[in-house]
Image (cartoon, rainbow over all chains, first blue to last red; front, side, top):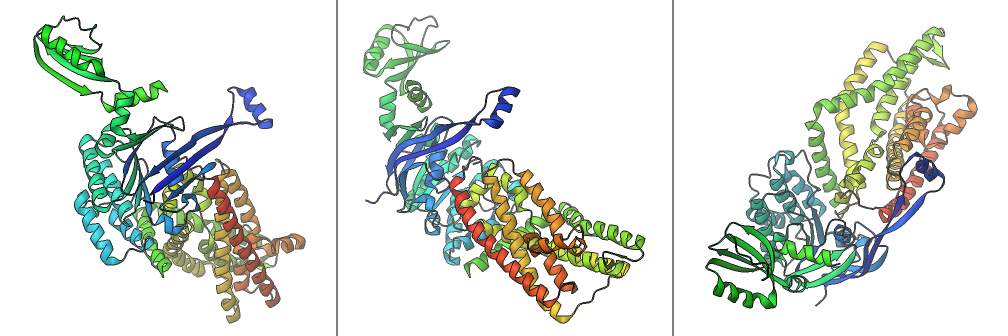
Length: 323
Length: 266
C-alpha cells in the first residue's frame, strides 16, 4: 500500500539569537551577535497509511506543530525527506495543496466579518469544486456539523465552538485526502469537544481520509486514535498502538476501593494516591493486581472496588517524565 | 477562467468587508485625499505670493496637477507593506499558504475593491475642487490615450514594488523603518510633495529614471501634457523596464521568502 504520509529523518532547526540580560550585553550584541541552533524537530521518521487517524502527542514545544507545518508545506525542513500523497510538501504544488488541509485551533481561515457561507463560495472557486459536488458536500457537512443556522451569521458573532465547526466545514469542502488537525478542540467545552470528535470520526469512516491529529485533550486521542506517535524535545519517542503505549509506560493499574473504615493502612499494598473518607485509590504493579485484589477481599469489608488502567494523561506524564 | 472567478468572488468578499467598517473606510479615504489638497493649497499660496506662478506653474495648473495626482495616487497606492509583518506574526499568512493559490492574488483583489470604493469619495472631491479652484487643464486626445496605459503600468509597477518591499518582513521582524524610508523616498520622487519639474534640472533628470516617478508622477505629467511625445515614449520604456524588473524580483524574493518562512505565528 502506498503510504499517505512518509517522513524520513525530518529535521528542522531554527537559528535563535542569544542575548544576555543587561544594557552592556545589549550594546555588545550590536557588534557581536551570537546565535544558537535549536532543533525543533530532530530526525523524525514515520509512515502513515491511507485512512489512518494518528494521534501526534508531545508536551508544548515538543515539535508537533513544526512537524505538521513541514508536512503541510508551510515550512522547509533543514534536512530529511517527506512525501504526502506522493508529493514533496514544501514544493507546494497546487496539485498537492488541493489534496490536503490543516486546521489550527488557534487560527482561522474564515473571514472574520462575514458569514462563513461567503468564504465557502470562495473556497469553491479556489479549489474548483463543481457546483453539484459543492452542494452535495455542503449538505453533508451541514448535517454532520449541524451548521444550518451558522452559515449566515458573521463569524465574529459565533461562539468558539461554532466557529471551529465552521472552520472544519471550510477545510473539508474540497474533500482533502489528508487532514492535519492541530488542536482542533482547543478551548472548547466538553460537549463541543465531543461533537467535534464524533464528526472527525464519522468523516474518516465515510471518506477514508488520513488524519494526523495533535491535541492536549487526551480524550480526543483516546476516542479517535488507535495509533499514536509521541514526540519529545523534537525526537520520536514512540510510534505504535495507544494500548501498547499504555502497557509500556504505565506498568501499574489503579484500584479504587470503598471500605467500611476511614483508617485502613493500605500503604503496604501499593502507592496510595488518593484517600477521601472511606474511599482509597491505590496504584499497584500490573502483575500484582490480582494478588492485591484478593488480599483486599479477604481482609477488609469492601462496599465497592474498581480496577482501571491509569488515565491516559497520567500515562503521557510518565512518558515524558521517564525521558 | 478560474482566476477570473476567484477575483470576482474575492472582490465581492472584500467589498463586503470594507463596507462593514464604513466610518473607518471614510476616514482613511478622506485622509488619503487630503494629502494632495494640502500640498496644492501650499503651492497655490506660493504661486500667489510669487506674483501668479511658482516654478513655471500657475495656480490653475497647480490645481490641475494635484487633482490628477489625487486620482493617480489613489489608483496606484497600496498598504500591503504596512501589514505584512502582522500577517506573518499572527499566522494569517500561514492560513493563506494552505490554499492552492498565490497570496498575491488576495492582495490584488483587496486593493482593487478598495480603489473602487474610493471612487465614491474621489469623484465628488474632484468635482468640488474643480468648481471651487478653477483648474487649468490643457489635455489633447493623444495624452488621454497614452495616460490610460501609463496609469495601468504605474499601478502594476507600484503594486509589485510595494509587494516586494513587504517581503522584507520575512527577514526583519521590525520592518516599519524600511516602510518609513520608502515612504519618504516615494513622497519626494513621485512628485507628491512638488512637481518634479520644480526640482533642479539634474535632480529632475535623475528622478525620471526612478521607479517612484514611473509609478506615480509619469501618468500625471503625461495627461497634463508637460512631457513631449519623445519624453512620453521614454517614460513608457522606463515604466516597462521597472515593471519587468519588479516582476522578476517579486518571483525571486518570494521563492527565497517562502524558504525562510518560520510560520511561528500559527
